[in-house]
Image (cartoon, rainbow, N blue to C red; front, top):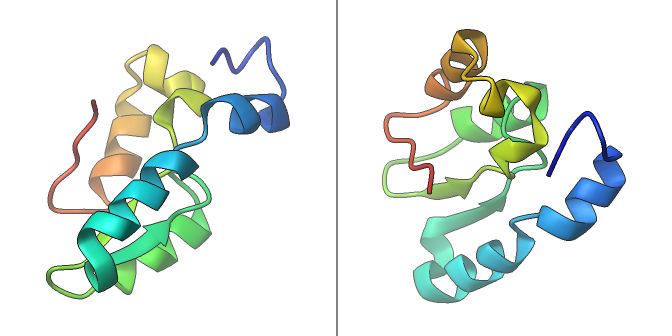
Length: 89
């Protein structure tokens, strides 16, 4: 995805992690609470704050944000504020 060249809707359609969320749901069962609508923002922060020990929340694709490809310290801080463990693969 290229945030400067594609619309949000086009990127979401082509690169959303929704298929991964479906797989995690079947593998993790009730421990998986869902896919956040974004990897940052108020709704995502709220979902992360409600997590209980042992629960997993999948954040939407970080590539939707220019900060991801520009190694933005501010973007990294926003992600780090959400969790104890962040896996970016």
